[in-house]
Length: 80
Image (cartoon, rainbow, N blue to C red; front, side, top):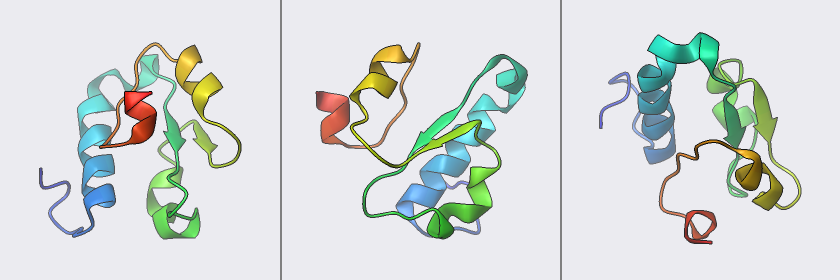
């Protein structure tokens, strides 16, 4: 994975790759970004406008259960 080729952070590269993959069907998708507790909105500010919803408080389980598909990095939430 290389993302846009400029970013060096793992999270940023994965977000960029995900957005590139979603681009052809973007009008059909409702994209939700669930922030990891170690990330703040300002850290990922350049990506936030490309998502329909940003989630960063409360338990994420309801969000995941309501989703048709979930894409994630290595995470206990993905295992749960």
